[in-house]
Image 1 (cartoon, rainbow, N blue to C red):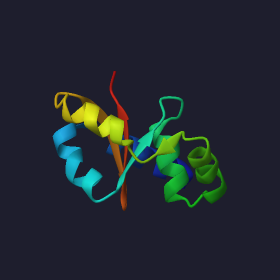
Image 2: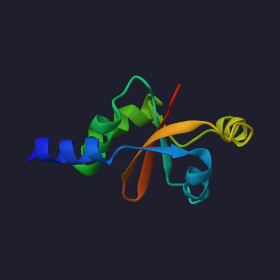
Image 3: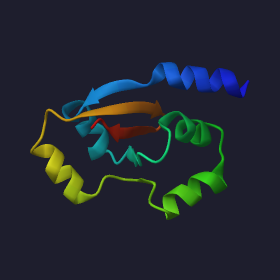
Length: 97
């Protein structure tokens, strides 16, 4: 079963523009995922209620809500793209370099 969920999550990753993410940022639902972490692994941990692991990532700031400075920078760079994965009620994102 876990492999099925990981496959589903992998297939669910999409590319998103900053403009598309803005409404989700405004409702406080976007979580930034560090480049050090795999988007699918983070999505899987959240979807499968791995609270300790997720809490560790939050404490280490490997996942966090976008900082005001990041939002300001991205408002000035509307062409920026993100890898995005929806894990209700969150949208997990990583900027594409």
